[in-house]
Amino acid sequence: GQSLLSLKRSLRLDGKRDRHKTPEVDVYCVDITNDKGKKQSIPFNAQVCWDREDNELEYGFFEVLVPIPADMKIKSIDVLNQSGEKMGGLASSAPPKVKIVAPAAGAKLEAGKVQIEWTVQDSDTKPESLLFHLAFSSDGGETWGPVGIHIVGNKYELDTAQLKLKKTENGMLRLYACDGLNTVIAEVDKLSL
Image (cartoon, rainbow, N blue to C red):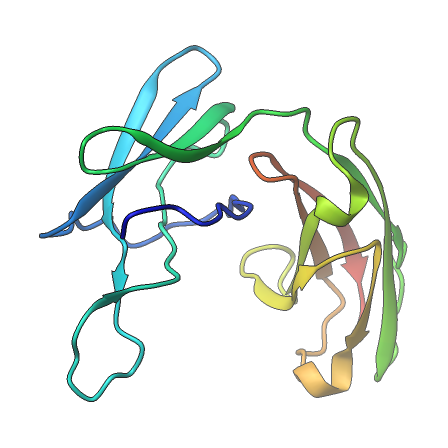
């Protein structure tokens, strides 16, 4: 609990999440500053319990979920210790531009393995530093389920049989592209399965 070894990319997801609970001990803080200079602070506890029989807490890998509006432009994320000293952070960058090129809208996805491909451009982030997640909706975007997470690169082989996706004529595929602070979405619709 004395230093922040690394700060990984963040991913912004849409949808409702459980409300944040304030920790009781060893409070750290995530400060998020938007592009207008307004700051939002979320306290958290960096202690975790990894299935220990004695249920003792220790310092280790952790994550912090921060509720922010989907349209909020983030300038920076800083992690502060109990004394308010900055332990690490991420600064804003230009968001990536992403487009799904396969499958095309209206495509029929055959049972088995389907190649998902996209193009991506990012002026200030190395391609290997970008992170992608894929989600599928069988009901035209009303509900989504993950089909690929923590993808690096610009393609993914989706196994429709293994995922047991529902048959649909109104399927959608959503790609989340994240550069650390910015998450953008590309979608393709009218997929049948």
